[in-house]
Amino acid sequence: MTPHAEIAVGPKTLPGDLALPPSPRGLVIFAHGSGSSRLSPRNRQVADALNAAGYATLLFDLLTEDEARDRRNVFDIALLGARVAEAIDWARGDDRVFALPIGLFGASTGAAAAIHAAAARKGEVSALVSRGGRPDLAQPWLPALSAPALFVVGGEDREVLALNQLAQQSCPGVADLRVIPSATHLFEEPGALESVTAEAADWFDRHLHQRAPHFDDRDSAGRILAGALARRALVHPLVYALPRGGVPVAAAIARTLQAPLDLILVRKIGAPGNPELALGAAVDGEQRDIVVNRTIARALVVGEAEITRRAEREFVEIERRRAAYLGGRPPLSARDRDAILVDDGIATGASMEAAIRALRRRAPRTLILAVPVAAPDSLDRLRDLVDAVVCLATPADFFGVGQFYREFHQLSDAEVIRIMAEFEARR
Image 1 (cartoon, rainbow, N blue to C red):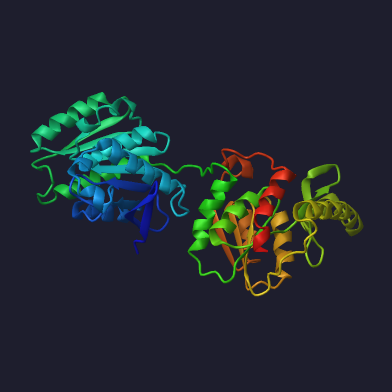
Image 2: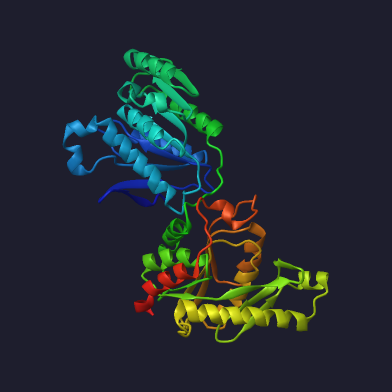
């Protein structure tokens, strides 16, 4: 199935089609030529072949219907390039494709728009393919094109071939030119378009490599995560955050779902002599709960009495935080609601396990664990404790949650209080 996509361009939206093969290797965004749209049969043929090769594809209209009636817009490369750049921004905010490496495929004037966008978003575009392109229309931006570029031209399209040869020479980075013998500008000859597709797939195979997921900040991660949750048929959803780091993530989700926001207060129980090592976790709720990591407790020979004593110190801090963050307000009832439990990421999972067990006691209709990123083994251990998991990334090279955020400051109590005050009216 190819889901419909709406590409935001300021106050406007442009229709698009996003094709998602299983476990896509990358995303290829198409920029069609003059007089075409996302329904271009040639581009769709190329996209179908790239889907079969394991790539997600996005075909979208670069202009609104009103804009397309003005022929000057069809050749406005700055405008068209800006639209392709905005499609890249859209992809980086969509939960289905945000972590994929991005390639651009441009045809005719669309190739010039793709060059413009690749220069504008040089940190985001990993490769570019031009089919019968007019790179001469992107001359101001060619010197800034750092993405590896492949120019594919028909052997009988001599004028365009000469323009592409000059463009290849102008590129400061990796650039190659492939000529399809006997093909004309539209590659309508038998087997010509298939040759273009093979060249494009090979180029993307060589240059689109998996990238580590990175979120701008917790709010951005929450907005991406909210997109995945919004597609679910949720019943009277209620969002729970693990403070402090989970609060801005959960707030972005609650805003999107127009749902109330509450807190699950959890404190790590540190091991003797090593407070950063979690013996377990203490959690508030209708009943207090202590979750113990039995493997660590046995290895350190820590008995139940010592664990309980250490947990009591954490319960004191939990009560302080509830009073500070919520003014002592009691927890919201999760009974018969879809409860969404959120943090900014999962490392060991001890705190999250404690929160899950506490929230289960509140009898939600379903319990959904939602996090932007998690250590794979920790997430696997938690899956059986919830009804559903929504996690955007489970990278193998996981050393800490903060490594997947560009901005990851330690939240203050004041920030948490400010965010929770925003949701007071929804309680």
